[in-house]
Image (cartoon, rainbow, N blue to C red; front, side, top):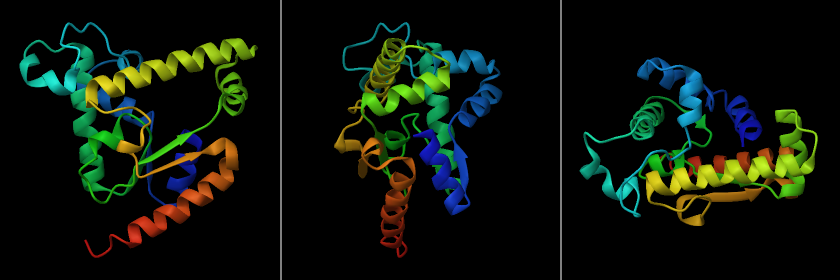
Length: 193
């Protein structure tokens, strides 16, 4: 999603936020970026009900973990970014955080393992497909658990997205072009709102 998100932001001449959010959160929370990155997208140290943070957050006040506080800070930051500027935000539960914002297009870009593995190997300097697959599975599980826990929604489902596309089917550039077409139509339909 990062590469396509960056291309979309460049096309529209708007800001792009992905790992930049980690830097902003580190400043806001007075924590090292490395610690934010470790906590982000991981559910840690919870003792709450199986229904997750989204259902139990009111009873957790005063008992929140660092992960809980990070999520709430990230929630406020993302909501503020969307309220004050046009931008592309990659991941970080943005689709759930901005679910009630009618001027937000919620995308889910996915790909099969055969497409992802070479990219993951290059990005992380891995040598074997098995290593890359293990890393992908771990990261996907962490992201799914985090998203489901904090939002009460299902990660990667049609319930939380306006448009989903398999970038392996079309490649990065064609996927970007398709999304631009979808985004242009989506935002044109909301100009009167």
